[in-house]
Length: 75
Image (cartoon, rainbow, N blue to C red; front, side):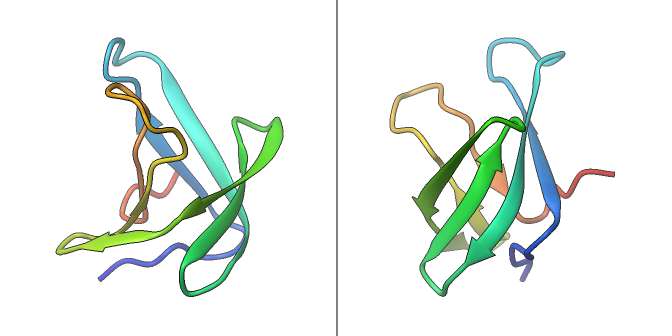
């Protein structure tokens, strides 16, 4: 199971436009929360969820919000 690691960057694509890529850089974490810098701008915190693919976070709560997975580490 993949876990978020401090100092690493993770990416996801927009649901509406596959050419639009969002990224987060993990600043710190606990067992239940992730603190990250979103798109190189503001610092946010979100609850960590887990499923059979590993950890994931969804910073916003609307139907087309970005979902970041620990398995999608930026190259």
